[in-house]
View 1 (cartoon, rainbow, N blue to C red):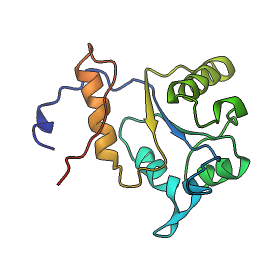
View 2: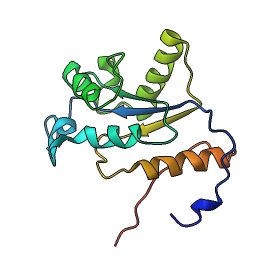
View 3: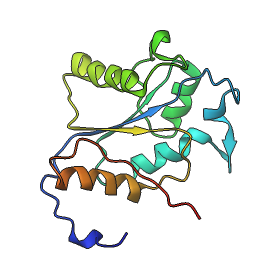
Length: 154
């Protein structure tokens, strides 16, 4: 990434929570989040990228499925809770399941994230470098409240 050497990291003691939102009710492709891709379930790729990030403190899978939770744990994610069914519907905004995860950790473990990452399980090409770049943008731009990766089209 161009100019990356110019980043000034102000605080590397931040608690960064990566939330992989993998509900089981896909209507277009049944169980798409656990379909195999190059020998691993689809969601394993983004879990592994988050695990190798230099900033991510914890990786959690937010799912309504015990099977998905077990698969997530196999690839290094925590699965301390199952997402309530009412938060696992098509129409539920991402904010709702992210808020559920954040408040669960606050209420059950007295642990509060400084930065929350939304990592869709359907992004197998996401690299830890991209995750780190988003976190660095937030750290170095305190006025920013969000950051997002994009890919230029050809």
